[in-house]
Length: 123
Image (cartoon, rainbow, N blue to C red; front, side):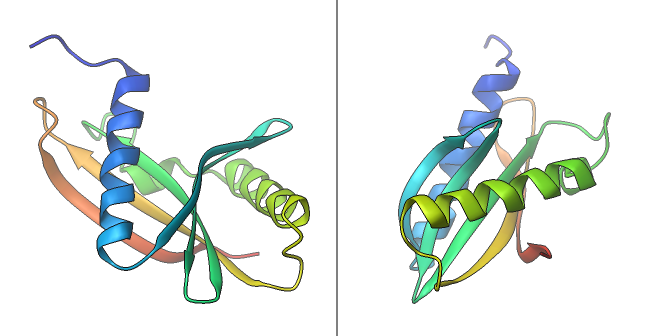
């Protein structure tokens, strides 16, 4: 089997994360929503709350655990992009949060770890 590129691994991880969320009752509103220089991997709704989900997928810990790669700069960008999404969709008064779904795969893209971290980024 050919080794997947970084983009393919990311897309694979996002598909796994979406399935995880849907199985738990989340309604997916958008995927890969872009604004300016920011991107939201998954936008979902759980009850009355809009949940922005940052997905981090890795095959190894060579550059740290997946959750360790969400830098303070990335966190700030996610907050700004989430606020832009809310404004663009006239959802200024809605409750919202930013979660992370961290995924680890083995060399054959088999899932070895999935953690859903609620309120992963504080605003």
